[in-house]
Image 1 (cartoon, rainbow, N blue to C red):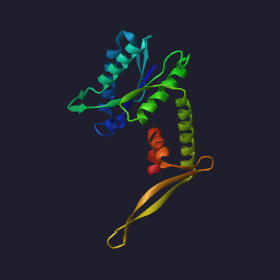
Image 2 (cartoon, rainbow, N blue to C red):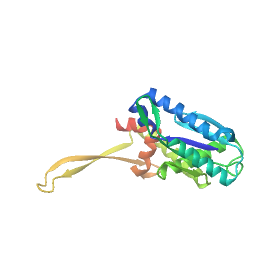
Image 3 (cartoon, rainbow, N blue to C red):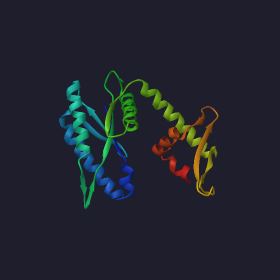
Image 4 (cartoon, rainbow, N blue to C red):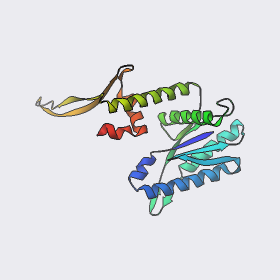
Length: 206
């Protein structure tokens, strides 16, 4: 099970527009299908996510398929007068070691995809059991963050910016802070990326 998530696809939708984004998704789907060919099934899972269900392959053939998929995605895509460059974060789970049913394999491939994204994007990672704990933790923080936002539990602190020559305060930096009853002080480096992934960052910004 190969889970493909296009990196920074939102930037395409926000800049050239949704029509260009839709055309990019269609072309990407064709590229993935051409690479996979008769070796498996390719499907759009939702949004900018795709799934490839590959036939039984040995390690070398699977690595070759993954490298071919990555290479096809980074090829420039032309939509009208636009030349677009995208990358992808890819997660892989293998039957039966990583799951014996579709839901488990998809969930575990998704967890591996997040590892690829967190490790710098534009790469593939294989599932390993500890990723399930990380995914559960991410879901827990996401749920608590939405509740904290709804209940007004996020705070903004202001750190003065001082002119070193005159000693005068010339501005302030706004710092978002979150203290959870169970988790304690949650560092922004942990909850801000989750807020960006889930879309909660818009409401937080407001």
